[in-house]
Image (cartoon, rainbow, N blue to C red; front, side, top):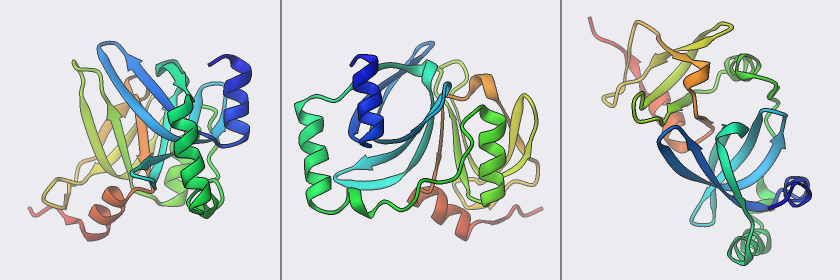
Length: 182
């Protein structure tokens, strides 16, 4: 897609498929782009014709934008079925940089999933935001057993490849999580 096509897709909140790459990782993101800054995209991600949460993706990890006939058909279906129209207001998040993003998410009190998908780092942090600095965010990690660790885990901004929130997984695990036993 060229720059004009990208801007039109964003303005119309069209369904797109993004190829995301950094270092040695490559993944896809599918959804409707809600907002764009000079450094980040906010999308509402989809799976099987349903919206499944929000993702914030650094633009420098996006190697390819796609909005072909398959994607236009998907967009047509979610529009015709009223799925696209059911999306509430776009979350109020300043997409200027990671610091402003995490401050907004912390203020909203939403649980997050912070990922670094580069193979040499490969981390997955899920939980509530504890602290935001100029270079990292710290999160009270929720274990797969539903325990909230007492020590916050740091994620350096320059390692983060994606942040998710508003999804079923992070919402439910944080709802039922309990403090770590000592």
